[in-house]
Amino acid sequence: MYFIEFADIGAVILQQPDEEWEISHQERFHKAYEKTTWVRFIKTHNRLNGIVFSIAEFAIITGVIAPFAMYYVHHARVLYALLSMGIILNCLTVVAFGTRQWLDKEQDVGWKRFREKHERERIARENPDLLRNTMIITLTALLPFILVGSVVFELLFHKEAQ
Image (cartoon, rainbow, N blue to C red):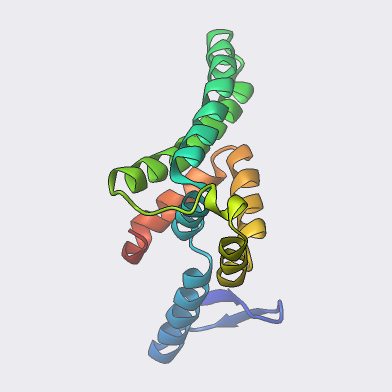
């Protein structure tokens, strides 16, 4: 059996897998995975923005979209219903992780980052990609089923994400 792999240079390689190829492929996958875990993005976002704030933020989005979803379902507008339900599920993913963090009494930064200069500097130093990651979460929450699908995939196939 042959597998197609996208190389780093963008070329497509057709090769028969052997044990060495399989190990190197898995190592590269796990290295890339460690850098871009959705669960890590969400938990870091919640911790740095304030867990309760993140829960409220995404719950409000859910509350705004939910009446539209019900309207679309009631009037058999399937495409719009699916789109709005996808957004709701994405937002509820962030709410669920936030709730779990809150119940586990995880320490968050929240409003301290706005009040204390040394705290802002520390956060910026330790999280240089904070703005980018926040934008990724926000945008994927608005793209139906993307965030929830990515998180479910991660939780099913990468036990270390939990």
